[in-house]
Image (cartoon, rainbow, N blue to C red; front, side):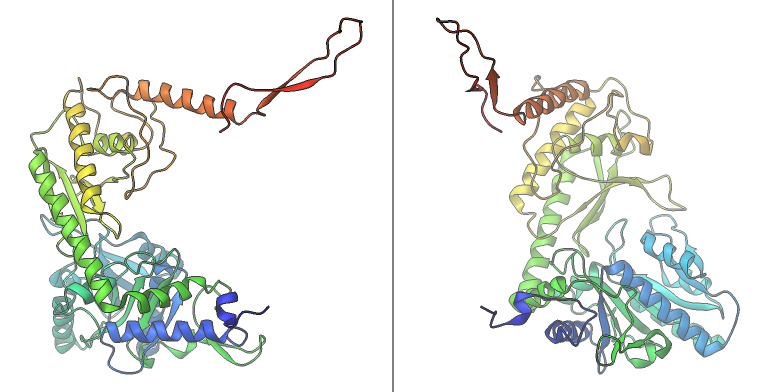
Length: 464
């Protein structure tokens, strides 16, 4: 029996809009919803992508073509952005022959600012990338201040530099909990915005979105008209054939939660982030840099007087409890700063936050009792613990639900060597359990010399 709704039976391919028109309609509705959410001035133009990385690529390509069309220059263009950008922007510059102009961090400024952006712009600048939610610390870059500074630059020199807002996370947070923050299409200099549906858009990977303020922001030579599938279909994503299930999930989530639901989730994530920040302050050895007041992201480091362990030790030992808390070094010129980062997402409740803080306290207490500190190197976060022994990776690591932990035989200390032995013992037990759960007895002679038949005897050990 056929389904009363063909879309539910098969979301189909996004590329084949004639065969799967309902998928195309849901995509168009999502784009219109995002355009309204980001205060687009008129008819919205945009598309879905495999993820926010592809959306960034499309936004950057449009900036480059728009600059080339406006200036006619054959020189190498440049793109201005902070040194804290996600790696996709460095990939874009390398793939499409654009000079990356990275504005370095200075002192306590961990993001791009207006003065730094304007100082790096010239007649070959295709645009400025402003990040709404830095990868390194979760802070918002001052989009309105950057736009105002670029307005002043154009008034003085005539150089027109547009802005692309990389809102991979923040574009699905700020509209719901910071409605008075001006960062979107209300600024005339913002040409395009991208976001990720599988981050705070709350759908499974992978889907991203990019929206342009009007037709002029998306040059016509980036749009291809395809007719060999039947009909005439405009397309401009980098990927052509891809499933439509994530688009259906995004539309369903928009309709199910609405603005009220997204606002409640964003506020709850911020509340949990503030709770974790307060808990880290109370533990003592940590200095919290960002407290989740913008993105629900915390970046924290160790105080200067803590010398017998470092952030990489903390990250490694928390993995023993099933928590993935990345430790990393900040970009130039703050390479001296090593931090840990926590991203609070939907499902990370106050109860889990309390469990996490207890694990942090226990691991830090064990690290404080350690005889010697571990060198501050990135190698220490991969496979080796404080004593140099290889540490097994957890089979099920997630920041939201810690798996069952392998505990040391000593309740007051944590030994990588002892944990490794426990892991090997557990692995060998599982290997034995996966073997056939019976043994065959060979035939033996009976009373009258006849051989008894071979029979199977169940093992004593339980089935896996």
